[in-house]
Image 1 (cartoon, helix red, strand yellow):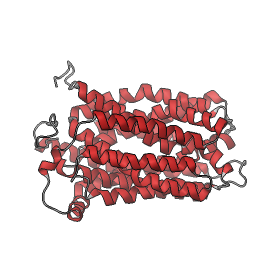
Image 2: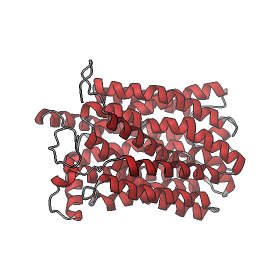
Image 3: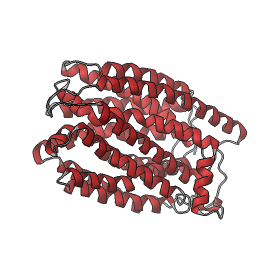
Length: 430
């Protein structure tokens, strides 16, 4: 790889292919979770669920994902990351198919549990692959592209999912995800090379010892806490997003796709810019700027009365700009914390804690938010805005500590070496 004129490293053709595959992979995983929010109002009415029931459906995925991540953590660095990715992605596809076939609240709940058992580990495996194959000076840009899955799911996935749900029912949205995921699975199988250089660095510790070593590392614990708090806001606000827009802001089901699509378009434009900026400026300062913007917009959003369609679209655009400006630098910092030999376990535990914290947040939100009838406005949504804002401030404290740890680690070690040849061991120098 050659440095560019501004000092950053260029991507090889193979690295560009990996970024594209991982971004598409993340698109299906994110869409599988995010589609519940715009379908929330339809699901609650179709399956006779109240906010607490729906909060349990959302959290069931998170808790099962958290449990599977912990169980997989001890083995995550013992296998080729490509093989692990293929195994868990196959289970994710099966779980999503079960969601599409569900016809009751209980069946959907069980299907979400199955999906979470497999889907919850995929993100951690992807992050481990990114950290193995890309240097620190590249990861901000990689994260910017991969995190675009959130935006693309809003521009393409969610509007199309709502459109299909309005025509053929909510089941069709999950079938759409299954079809796309099968195509991505084939691309991973045929185009991704083995990612196994970390195997040469493994000790003879058994899975349990490796897990205990990972969760007892003080630096890792700080990063785990930061990630857990980072996920709380989304799990509290997003599951009830469509119900809030329809019942409180008086947006119609036909207008929902436009709201999500335009919000996603703005995110697609801003996220690569944030990724590039994250590689050039202090990541913690960028995180703080995004956090401040997010707090302001959350407090505005959760206290809205019925407003024109264009106004809610603009508010959503700015709100997501703040959220993405937090996620990209925070995720980039966290991936720099673990040593290569621990990355798989670290990413699995990290993802598990993120999911379980999100599950608790979804359950808490379901208990705070109330709705007298299935068509009446949601109550206490403004309280969620205050709670989320407090969590953002607490998260900033932990992200600051992570930032200090990363700078100390960089000062101790040589310039980062990337795994150009996965079959040969190289020393991890982040």
